[in-house]
Length: 225
Image (cartoon, rainbow, N blue to C red; front, side, top):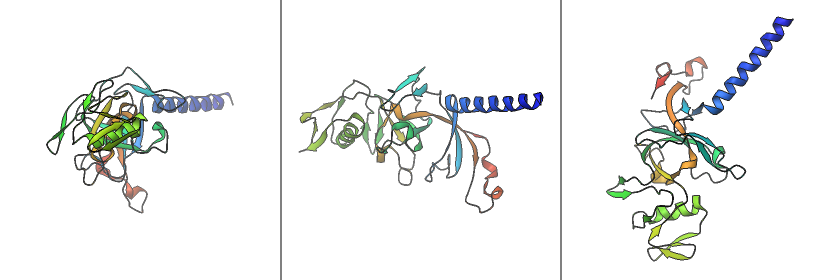
């Protein structure tokens, strides 16, 4: 009887440790249907390191956003983040998407020959014809400001501005093929508080086979990324 109790206690402790490990260090997400071929495909279960850029805490109205041991997102890294346009839910409850980071706060990347500079907190971004809509939407969706475009000018809180200032850091994400997989060309800048962590591995992958065991893709077990 005593051994049985010890066994049950050991199982409970192991389960709690696994839950703690999953919540604090790593977590597993299912790749959306669009995928990022050939790196990720529909049905992949990916392992995300939540400490890659510092552990995110808060991000809702009850607990403010913070990040322990903050690190910048590296250019070209495959990142998991909460979907920026899902405004019906709090940040941490939004659907999870994946893309490559192409530019961080204050960096420059080029889309169709035009420079795109993700806003850096409290640093000005000059309003240009090719970024005015992007900046306007960022004010509306993520900054909680009243913004509009009139006569080719950006109007923020009722005043025209040539230079935009933001209260957060933002990133530009790319899926490589924006025609089939949404990326920042569709949903705009990704706020720093939406970043979950770096995708480090495909743990396993399942297709659409009717057979349970037949649905597993044998070539996609424990694939480092």
